[in-house]
Length: 88
Image (cartoon, rainbow, N blue to C red; front, side):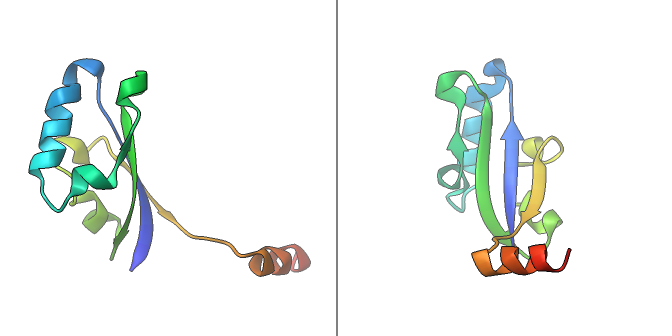
């Protein structure tokens, strides 16, 4: 499994419906996200574990899947960074 960052967005007019759809999706998906809606930034972000980007995308309600940005992410340790510098 890999870790993915998912970013979803909606307009202010779509906000309540989008959040309701996330809540109805189950799997506590609504709770996994952090939302900027209260500050006027109608996006949400979550880190999820999935087998591939399509599996990560499929966690979302159908209405959010097409616009979602799904990016595989990794962590770097200080040691890995040092080795990357040495190999350049």
